[in-house]
Image (tube, rainbow, N blue to C red; front, side, top):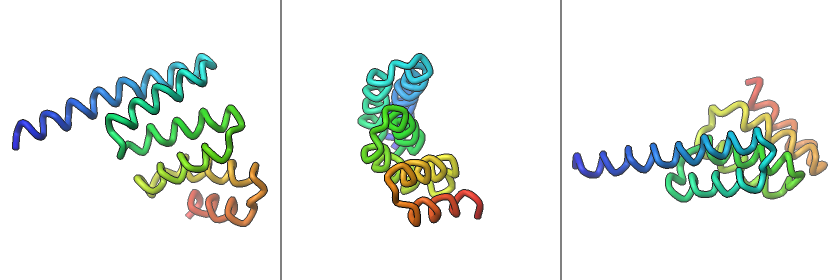
Length: 111
């Protein structure tokens, strides 16, 4: 049991390194590299809402709205309290001319 917990902690920490690297790459406008880093983080720890959220944000920067929507959906599925992900999702839905869905997503932020 202790070995299992140590592996889980190690995986989470390793995933976190890739998450943070992706954030730094995104801030450096190295979007494709950032996405690869977020993908690696998700591969290691698929249930991390922040990795999905940050990937979606970078995809939004690249105007890849359909892909961003998938990642935002996963982020809010994993953490329904992630108001920033709902906000990003609303923006993407707006860009896709899905106004009613955008409003519903924005409502999640203000409720």
